[in-house]
Image (cartoon, rainbow, N blue to C red; front, side, top):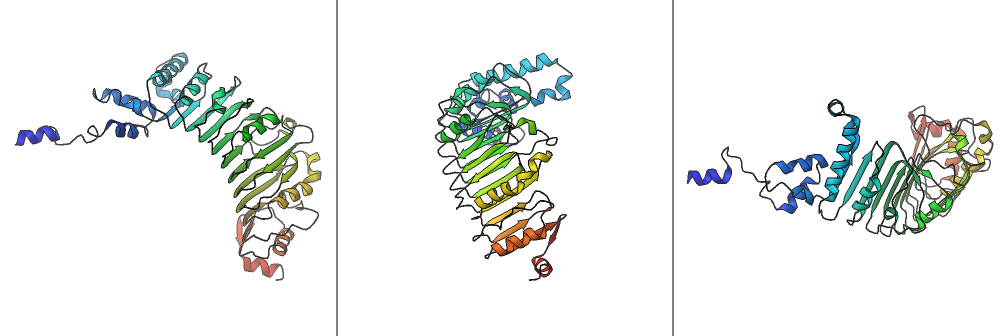
Length: 382
């Protein structure tokens, strides 16, 4: 009786419950491990040798090559070839459909497009590409723009986004792009027209120097983030077309909007019919070029007019020395919560109060100090 018990639980009395799980469940568990660690489990036993081939999330990042523990043992060329061979070996396996494929690169590899296309061919749902410290000029494979199984697409790094004539991302719901250069206006139009179900869009620190009209047309879009700030400061006015570009938002179902922009880089705004807007976080900053300051008041007024249906607004104006606009603010008939940031003048606060009859909550920040509504109203003579 005792010997039978020992066989079931093992010599040390610890039962190996994980190995007794179904192979498909073990593969799901391995999907949450870094890919190198998942593959390494193949040495545990004969049963585990190929279990890693059932994982549905692949995450490759060559940043581990930069760690001292590796760089001291091998030359840079050997490290790079080791990474290439590893990715090739994993992708060549007869693996099931993939849920997520993430690729982070700090080196240029001739195999990049092959790796991406191979992953997309397996009914991929999420594609995340991070190209850091490199410029990727060979262009993304066409399959990136025609993969109907994709739900999430994230592109970060030195891409030039040259969108092909045919775009068919029929199920894409989330698009995240950062640090890219847009090739032309038509590429942007083709991209958004090919994503009819797009619900979430984030555009951060991209290069608009070749763009005349940045037109976002997305009929079911619910969340939009546009951040024009760049790391290491901002002094790239010569990168923009003469007179700046025009920002057009055709997003009638937008509920959440975050915009961080330099006034003057966009020569005009067309923000219309945002009747479903619930939350807006707007920050305007003046650029370093004096010749762009002349139209600040009109530009900000154009943008504010377009978001007048918002319910909750966090607004940071360009500068305490610049008025928001020449004419009175539009009516904010739905505004119930207002937060005004550091640089705002008292006159701006008064303008908002006069035009927001349903306001329930007010936060007015002065040098990071929150002033309670009672003190503000006393100061203003209410």
